[in-house]
Amino acid sequence: MKSSLFVVLTLVSVFAYGKDWPNVEFPDTSEVEIVADEMQYNGYPMKTWVVKDKRSLMVMADFFKKQWQADSERFDARMFNGDYVINSLQPPYLLTARINQQYQGVVAYVGITKNMDNTQLAKVNRDKFPKPSGAAVLSDIQSQDLYKLGRTVILSSTQSLSSNYHYYRRHFQQKGWIENSAILDTKAGKAALQMSQGTDSVDISFDTKNSQVYIVANQVTQG
Image (cartoon, rainbow, N blue to C red):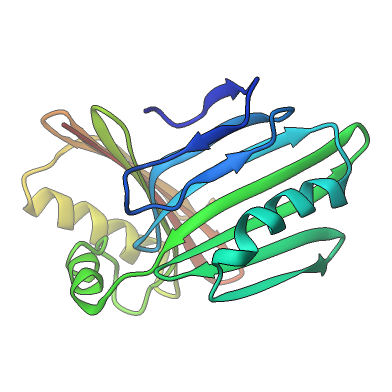
């Protein structure tokens, strides 16, 4: 199922993604957008939804509290920075709902994150996106649909713009990737690379801010 699929619910709906994942029910008055049903955030599998409803914040909060609390090993629900936040630990899953009151109702951001054992984490670590020495990974998001795997990685590096640019250029060239376009503008503090290997592609942008180089890589793998 593709991400960003919009679903209008006319009944109380149950989203069941196999027996391993918890079922999530939404009110029969809600409009639900599936943001991602096969996604990884920093290596951890996730499923996320955006829920819109005309009912009040506390009525929506009570809906999720009644649904999750009895099955929780640990449970927390409270106001935080103007939103009502619910956390339900149902090992190995963490269910969350962040509910925001708006003018004509509420918007709830609902997610499930699955914890992983050491073997699974080791597999994720083997699949780490390449990074220059000393660079920090700020975010690593992967999403899967029927035909392709998409990945967006954000990094920061204290190395120079030129060093980061040439690191990625050499890395992918050595693995047989073809350079489609390449721009390095040290005066502007920006650079960009577009490379491909068969039907797979990677676009990498570089931006210098406050002596840091921020790198955003978008990789698409077909099949």
